[in-house]
Image (tube, rainbow, N blue to C red; front, side):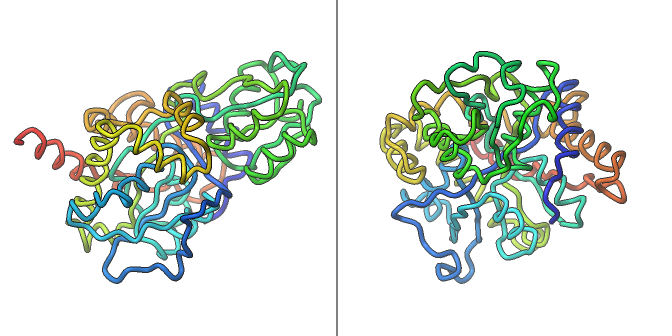
Length: 349
């Protein structure tokens, strides 16, 4: 899969300013003591599920640690990726069966020839993606001429562009410093750049710089960042019962988290490499989608709150600006039968 170019993000943020939902989201370079080598941890017959550093995806760790996969009759080979972009390319290569990734990245994968299916909405970002600045910078206008770091082609680079556009600035008005997300946060703390665009849990690291503060976040652009469980079509066609079991396990995990809040936070904060108190600060920054939210998102609609509409708009623009030779076929991108089946199961119980 080709990595998103800066041009594609400029196009997508113009769409998002006109409408209202889903584009991208990342995760990069975090290790914890319970990390395993994905190459050596394969489980025969298990669903190979990738995830990376984002609060909306840490519940997968809870599902594994609490035996929720087993309870829902599905074996899962849960694979942690230090780099979000690596997880995308690994799914595209068919080396895993499913991955947690964003709508924008999935449409781009389809444009590049991948055959993938969105079966579940994990979350929307509502503040956990932030642009953080040093002391003395008090407005977006103050970023003019300043050094701003972000990982190029990720959701936080996209968020930065959204903020600049809203304030009447262009990407050329800043000194953009492309760094991997973890390194971007470290460079900001070390005083090498004036501002940084990062996502949780790297936001916690960046805010440790004395005098630093949040300038704006995904909360200022509601619905712009959505995250999903995405499978290869081959796996969905061959193992629909395992897909259903994994979707069931996700919602069972959300129920478990509501009933065991502190224990779940302990697990997720460990995976994130931050304290429980720090992790609790992320709670309002990511909106985990309920079954009702999922059912609504999968419905056809005339604005960006509909996944079908959002994907179509992204597809049109990819073709119009030449980032895709042909318009990507998204007619079969969404498969809501699994969330519908879960909703029906809950209704009957």
